[in-house]
Length: 205
Image (cartoon, rainbow, N blue to C red; front, side, top):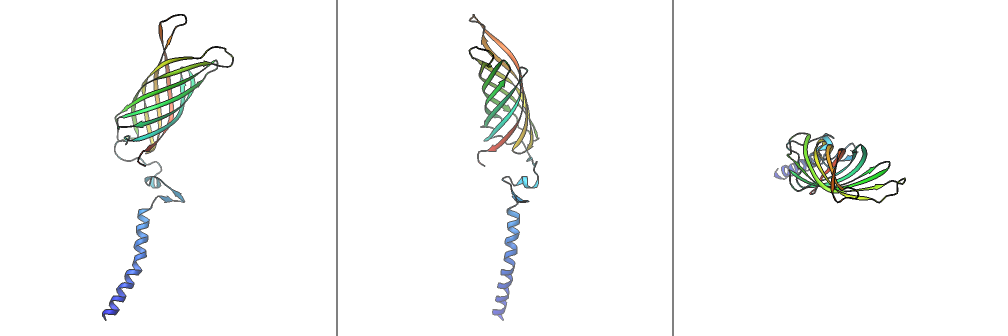
């Protein structure tokens, strides 16, 4: 009698084991949906998911291609940033302005200061220093000129999802140059507007 009872219990246990394993598999691997594998599991349920709480900037890097206008001329920029703290980010930028008579290349290194908020919209301030190289086009024969450039402004990031944000920015660019045939310095003011997409990634991911 005891032998039959033990055999029956073993059969029931083995019969129920595959079901339990399948149930665990279904709950622990939801990253594959409709033939796609999601690196961020939350995106499998909602492609435009934004987590709760303030945006996690600390120890994240961002790659930001975009463009806009500088002093009335269009320009294109490529930026890369690293956030050592939640409120502070360091950003390197290179941009090119393809003017008709002259071209300009602006290289800057900037600090981004923000207070992370529990929303999709994230305002920030930006201040930077760099160099601007102005060189003539093919129709003008002249030497290129390199001058110091200061940038000050701010912008707004609008998160589409946790790792992608639309970025809108406005800056005042001050170019400090010298007058021709004079040792005096002159400051030239330009308005810069910038529109881009920022792609975020955590260093631990």
